[in-house]
Image (cartoon, one colour):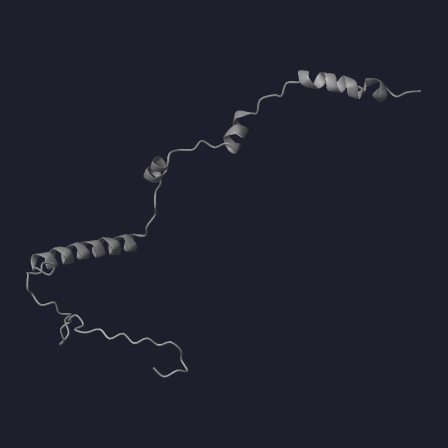
Length: 115
């Protein structure tokens, strides 16, 4: 006596003939959006993103920027960046920087030989 399960089973040939006729159901939109998220251009991401900075840090950065601007304009107005032709270049110390008058290179070939 055969069971009803064996009567309803299809053979491999029948299954192979039905396989090309089978249509795959479309993926639900929620799954497609999860697997393939919509990409936005980088400039929109940068423009719309928000960066949270603590208020004391933002204030310190603003003061630092203002000080840097003030120092730049203050030095430029006093001629710190402008050098007149023929002016001496000093490093701020008591000696003046000058180019080397005569260069005498010393070649050291080995440590055990006196040069």
